[in-house]
Image 1 (spheres, chains in turn red, brown):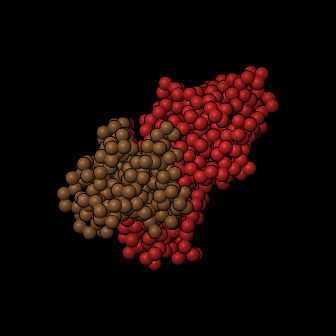
Image 2 (cartoon, one colour):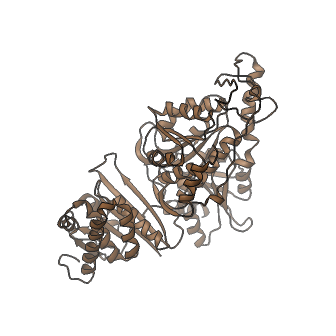
Image 3 (cartoon, chains in turn yellow, brown):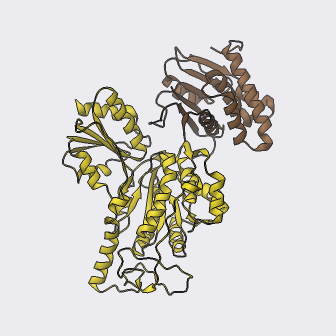
Length: 388
Length: 186
């Protein structure tokens, strides 16, 4: 997980250049820049290009890429790799993401830092295999069983696919948790210019380490450090309820209660550090209508807001960059003077439900499914109906 | 200034790569570009579409709404998208692959021998690059230098010369069509 000589050489080779990349490819480069050293995955449209580029490029930076037999194994492999000290990741789409849910739960329970990229496509099931969607927003939150918290970020450009991979790996290590990059097939499959940063501007957060194997799953710390396999300590890692030293105790109520509450709390307490939003609001309280969107939908949404403003309408705009934990405080603040919030998303209304929970004004979903993103005109029309 | 371009063909005719080359040239010209594609699950033969938006401004919506320029290498692609052309837009088709019938009114229409030219150069695989040459000279959306450079950097080096020749031929065909020398255009 160190930014070693191989990776530095790799970054020096690419740094300062501008490439014309698919969102998927930008994500792969971003991962290598962020110090990823292990990838395991199984190809699936529209995420295959992540694995394709990683397979070609990661070994050049000293990393390892394995094509597994399926998504269950891919997820299991990245958990195992993380425990040897690797920054590990996988990439998939809806059907594969469904298959990964059990082992994502295992990663949550074992507090394993790793990154899962989900380039969302139209479902359920095989759905429209080659078409984009944003239908897994709540699956990312609640897909695996049991009480848990999760971190998920959603890029809306190829450049952001690159940039957010660094955030994903850093957050995974900081909070010792799986982190999901919730891309969508639209962003994964558009090509845009991506600026590859110079080595001097690449930050690197290192993983917190523990000194004693007795406290790698609790003890004094809200987020305990890790001890890696192969370092000489006896480390027990289990998905069953366990004590601070990792040994199973599945019958004592307070052991389970304390463990799960701590795993829940470590992400809740980091909310202000994790939450990322972008706002574009008109001068103080003049606006009655706001638009909240994310990922690919945020682009026509932004265009529609601009078009409405050009016609003299005061419309506020907020883009969710982090999806989970939900930006409840920021969204509540944004809504304060508004009568109405419109939420364009490529599903039948998922994040709009979450937004509703934290605002006093009316929330209207602007859903679209079928594999084609909203057009600027479609959202513009909804905005103009709302203001009149 | 924003230009929306749409390439339609059957899968395997190289229009996705053509779109990528256009985008790379635009970026080298100092503009913004977004390229996207849509295709069926088949690797060859299905309907394929490649779109490029080139703009001096930031591009909000990454897909073509109304094309300034439609390039069609397949009949179904032409039939589906010809009427969606922007008034005053440009339609460019392959003369052997597309029967345009009565092209939409008010647009500039060019029917040119792309596949035939590629065959004459000895390899039909460079059809997409012949197309790019003509698109370049007809639309002038990107500079010839940067588009030729994008072609060169995206093809295997042993085919670079053939591709650059295809590009030059395409460019010439487009120029001649512009000045009305070619029978079959307009």
